[in-house]
Length: 485
Figure 1: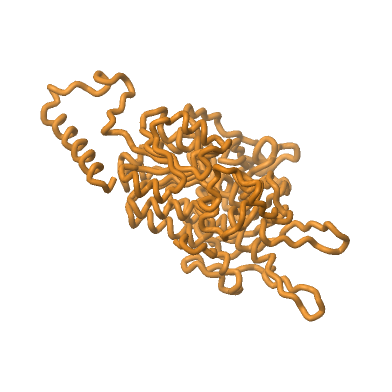
Figure 2: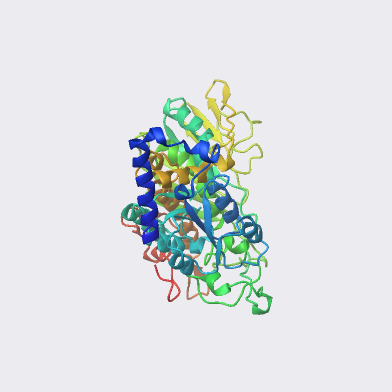
């Protein structure tokens, strides 16, 4: 919106609004001129996508609000790929095409808003480049690859006065309001324990890093741009378009994939902020007798992570949150009948808020909420139907972009960076513990000292692990030359 053309467009829009007020008797309503739902070209948002296949496709399509807004440009490092980008290009044939998001943002100054749906390691670089140019941004979960990046994006959004939303669409699910209503009414009392879990990973993980093989790279994939901030390497088969999730250089494991969908529920309901500490243990794999496999490049098969939080304005007790993945689920709390499913109906993902009077259970996105009162009956949340894709998560962001920074529409967003940043930092704290768990030094007797297997104390305001300096390397990352942020 910073270009001369954009300023002229905005000036024209303001002029038309003032003219309509001054001489409304002569102005026909727009719905008469263009039909119900018609949006004049001057009132359309110019949207671009960085990552136009996979989840990026649905993010962009939903952001157009059934064609109400205009798609100006598409950026994807594999424009000839079979991950949905071809369908996106066919749907928006007038959109300019790019492989490099920097070139797109520099060459298309009239872009107003950008959806960013890349592998995790490229979320922050793309968002920073867009926000520096005054673009509103919608960024897929997890917001960033590491905590430093999350803090950077949160602060930059305020500084640049842009409207933001993270792509954890369940944040807009009205079922979450049921969970919050029950808790706010004091029906389960004070919460001291929260349990969250997922069946992820459902991709290759806990195995040796695949070997590079340049001969298998698709000819039309720009692998160097796909790598971006990551270390230079030849094409690694299987990484694109999805299996990057399990490797720390590119992804954030099961926590990064599902944490922002699941931890969102208790984070909002209890008014949580930065944790005070984190500790973990991980599942082991033995390919040979008495010799534990060691693959620190990637996330493990399963994890058990414990995060502690101080009391909040909404909850007077400190809270212990445990996260489990790899199919490991918590047991039934006392208030929940033994045959009652926990979380999702399948039990694959879920949340338990355990209070001194009862328990609230829900699935991913806050779906399937249930209230269990100790010694009392179970109550199910009402069936709430939402007649728009992904609870209107992208549409609400677009409406807020049009209303402007700090508007009521902006303030009502359920995952703007003011909220999504600290919540993502909590998710990524678990990964710091997991990666620290694999730190080791060889001892004189030939055995290893796994010195990171301890409770890590966290100074959230200053983003520092205070009792293990080596763990702080995971607060940020090494950036390839030319890609620093």
